[in-house]
Image (cartoon, rainbow, N blue to C red; front, side):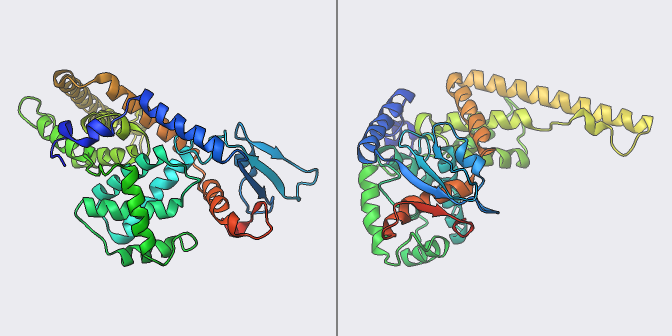
Length: 361
C-alpha cells in the first residue's frame, strides 16, 4: 500500500505502455480463438418495434444470412474475429459495463471514487479473462463489492446481492457465497494489487495551484463539475491503464478550459434587436473571448512549467474524443441482446440458436 502514486503498485505493476497492453490483449485473443472458434449464432426476428436490423447487419465483418421473405427470422453468425464482445475493441460493451456499475452504485448510494475503483478492477480483469468465460453481471457486482471494501465504504453483501438481483435477476444468483467465490478469483487475477490512485485528487491539486498568486486562474464550480464528468467518462477508455492520474486530470482540465464560456455569434441575435443591446452583446462577447484567451494562455504556461509529458496529455484528449465519437453510436439493446444470448443460450434445451424478439429488449 502506498500513499503516493510514484511508489505505488499501480505505477510499477499495472501501468502499461500501448505496446505491452496490446501484447497482453493479443494473448487473450489467441485464447479466445482456441476456445470459441465457432463464434456466436443468433436469430433476429424482423418484427415491428424490434431491434434495428441496420445496426445489426451493417457492421463490417458480420456474416448475415437473409431469406427472401423479410418476415422470416434472420440467421446471423458473429465470428470470433469480429469486435463484438471483445472488451478491447467493442465500445458498446465498454459503455454498457460503465452503465452497469453506475446503475448499481446509484442504487446503493456508493461514492464515485469507489465506483471508479470498481471500473479499474473490471478493466484490469478483462485484460486477462474473456467476457465469454465469465458472468459479466456477477463480475460487475463483485468489482463494486471489493472496491467498496478497499475504499473504506463497505456494503453488506446481502444488501448488495439483493440490489443486483433486482436489476439483473436472470444473472445474479441469490446465494451471496457466489460473490465471495468470485471475489477470490478477481483478487487472484489482479495479483492482490488493489490500491488505485484516481485523477480526482490530482484535479483538486492542480486547481489549487492554478488559484495561487503565481497563476491567478480561478476555476469555477461549473468548470470543476465538467472536469469531474470528463474524468468519470475517461474510465471507459484505456487511459487509466496507460497514464498517471495527473496526466488524465490535466487533459480533462485542458478540455474544460477550451470549451468554457463558448458564446456563439448567433446568440447575439436574440430577442432584442436594438442597436444599444446589440452593442452590449458584442462587448460581452469580446470580454468573454479575452477572458478565454487569458485562461488558455495561463493554463498553457502552467503545463509547460509543470514538465508534464504533453504527448501523453494529447493522447488522452484524443482517446476521449474517440470515446465520445463511439458514444454517439452506442446501441444498448444490441449489446444487451448479445450478452443475453451468450449467457442464457446454454440453458435452452435443443435450441442451437438464440432468437431476439421485442420481449428480449
